Length: 271
Image (tube, rainbow, N blue to C red; front, side):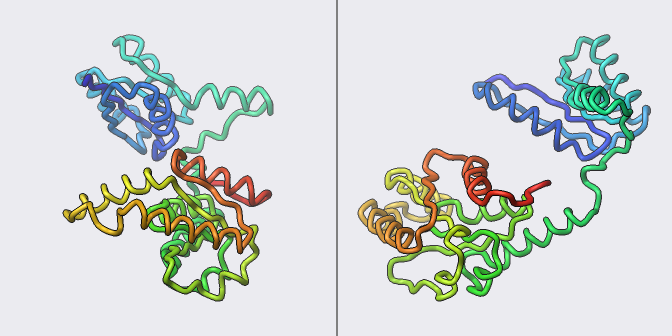
């Protein structure tokens, strides 16, 4: 498999450039992409050092600089040394300047400022960890979102993803013989989301999980008939609650999260 080296250079943390590069690279799955991130590059001397290394390694460059002199320096270097590059920020800044007739403030890292929104997100993440896997039923009454589903339906990763969008999420695994906490029945059904999966897909996920633990994959946990019984039980619970049900079989965490936030309507999910 051919390897492509990508240098992510930014005067902030570089998340935007990294995300754009990953989104594009996903369309070229036959290649192995190796990313190297260089955050908080805010001087010409440091930038020159990074660019020289990129030249030595024949790396492509994705960059986000609000400082026009630094972004232009990257573009010029890449043109002269024939390095592929993508300037993520400059076109966006130019567009906003054209709309507003105002020049950008040129303050790196403004989007990551420690404002109220930032601390709300941290609180949401702590909430998701505290009330993960039904640890404390009182969390269901305080949550913005409650996720229900049998084992391995992506409840925990989805909880953390939504927490990064400032939503307080609690989740509960559904087990046929276990009693459902009384608090669940007191939650607005519009805040509850049932996660399900295809039996064959869930069987494969559970078998892989057992292998990762170094255990025999052929157990009752991965038994297809038992999985069907679990899913049937979960479906009855979902119908009794009257909540929205999402089949995560062929959906990414991002797709499922979008369905949930759209269902919730006007909520603040700014990052």
